[in-house]
View (cartoon, rainbow, N blue to C red):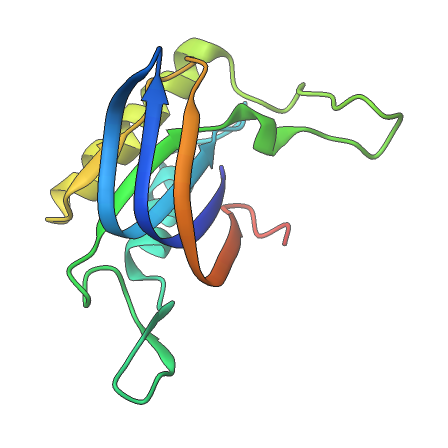
Length: 149
């Protein structure tokens, strides 16, 4: 499982001209599910995202999590995070999970984050989405449940 996590303000996702998810302050999480992902990967990703210390404390040091700052999370499915471009110029998505499995893990990720008491919005799985946000910092973190980076 892979994610790109961004510290954001004024974040929204639109599908067919309608806003389907919106947060004011917190994290935008692009989530990609791999073919071989398990409960271990899911639990690792939830724990990392929820406890990631990328918000400033009183000394302006990134030392607080989204929980600490009472932020929100917007999750957007993003199979292209699994694109392999090591060969050729067109990404290969052979490591990406099949849509049914990916959707299951995407929904379970959202439910697990909500279960931590964090207000969580989401995009629509497999839809053409338009994501608008202000990245604060900018702060962008890459997470891979298999620790490939």
